[in-house]
Image 1 (cartoon, rainbow, N blue to C red):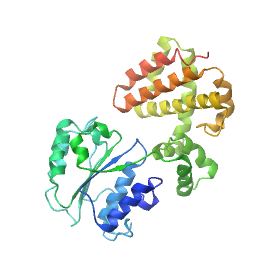
Image 2: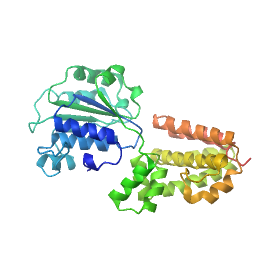
Image 3: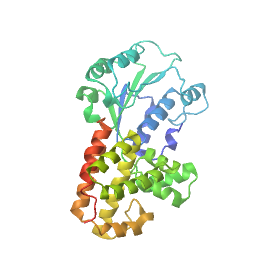
Length: 331
């Protein structure tokens, strides 16, 4: 588990949270917003550990006390992390944590309730939580995380102090990866570029899964260029076997077609997500025009957004691949 001071990126948010812990002026509810995978939950857990720490140092956890060790091992009795039940957070789950809110904490400090994916709350669950947000017990803190805050009730938004997370710039991400994981500058460069500002995606790339996805996405693009309707549907069925894998492949495809567009329009390699494939990009770019590439990128992006919003993965991919089968074939 990371300390606040160790976390890559998000320096304005980190400074605010460190000052909050050091001063003791803590709001009763926070809302961490930003894209998936940028580190909201990592920061939230580090913030919770600092608040529960019995000997904080300059606003950060000491890492040595009993409370810090309990948070690190996920067994602190006053820290509750609520996970969705299926695709939603139901009212029974919210009622379950709210039953704990009026009582004293087990260890004499704060009670902290962390709600990742807060936009997954049903309307009934959100309204149930709202009643406590309006009149919270003095020692209770809620931390809501959301990649889609527009899906939350406006009344919930208004009761939370908002911390906005942004995509981490690639140079900063590469520098952090090199420092934390002992990578060379070259080893950190490509994961940082492919990650699109997401620490989660960068770590997946380091572990090798993104490299596999790049190969799979390349084969998929080639196959779609030759596919008829039946072949496109078969490719969609295979790709949809894993939702997370499908999202990774779609993100990789977006990066690939974006690189083709950049090369076609500028001939520059400095802004490519896949600089190690510049020769292949140069060859492939000549088979497309800019309008077609923009259409492909927008179609893949729209499909990715639908899947992230919990649409049926297979149906979305079937519609996308049927469309792409007529678009990715060379001009």
